[in-house]
Length: 154
Image (tube, rainbow, N blue to C red; front, side):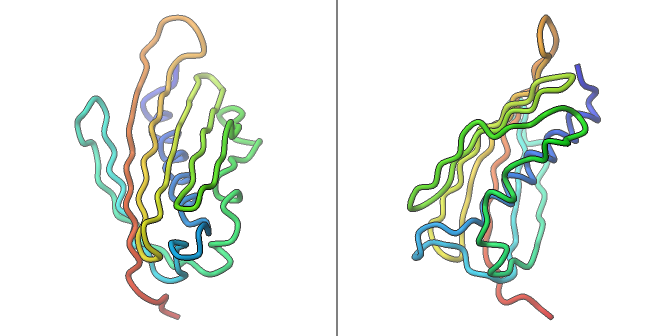
């Protein structure tokens, strides 16, 4: 089983994939616009809010063209091998599953909904547990909401 510190690394990795995946171009009417974006991520474990984090970044047209680049983990992941088990685009969003197997097994199911070109939201459900046998299983839900805050500053 992984240490709590290792759990945080896994969860941060999944959150990064979720945030990066959510900027993908989909239906032209709801595809996110390039610009400065604020993303608020809320993490819950066992029904209790554990953290609320706001991150901001400038997204260019190029950033918004290749969603797979932000979703697919590197095969050289230092804690084990991660695979994207599923990926689907629909007119108003994305969904995908990721599984990482190392000293423990992490599985994540994510969805993102684009409601306007300046707002999107999503959820990632994460399960982290032992490869086999007894051990503690951690279940975490990360929700995120992103709003375009304007143009990028030079």
